[in-house]
Length: 300
Image (cartoon, rainbow, N blue to C red; front, top):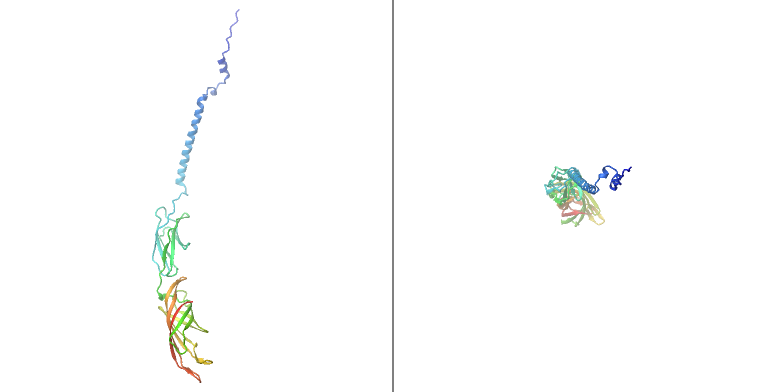
């Protein structure tokens, strides 16, 4: 009896049987790697597109992305008075209207107006004085650049409105003198009867050791007043008697300037006419006489 022949093992079949079945066994390792490398660029491009779209949306919506605040244009002076000035301007050339305008003078804020306003008036200023103003637009807390300063001036009033005030030195020059009269300087202290402007004044006059008061009444540009005094003596040294006299003053301002919101006189001119009575004692007498003098004065 002949035994059946067993075929010899196949090495290739044995190797195939050793590899586990499933998808991994059929995977093509040579083509898998390139597919993974292609996915990376696709994801990156998509992310860039999304980011760009978000950035564009934020640029449109973002509340902090506001147009710049431009300065107002066409700043020009307007009507002025002795105590006030005015000026005007145009809104910024582009962009929304400002919330308000700041008015600057001397580096400080003098006032403000609404963003719809296009003019400003400042009162309570000193006559015949110069000022410089700037207008700055404000929107959302942001200020525009400052424009060039605008020079403006208040109007000088007429001399008839000049105010006499303060201490003065008044020079008296005799042009028709009484016996013993001489030239000299008086000290005048003016106290106006009003809080502002030109009006009557009370004058305290000091002449050496003598002092007297009088009221000067204002009529237009002229101030007039009189005083009864005993500054003159009749007699000889060591033996004199009072010689009462009446002094009549007439003065007017000859120049003025703006000072602390007032139109103040800075020089004056006028006349003085004095009349002395006839007086006598048992030993001597002095006849009645009249003297005249010119007056010129400036603040002390």
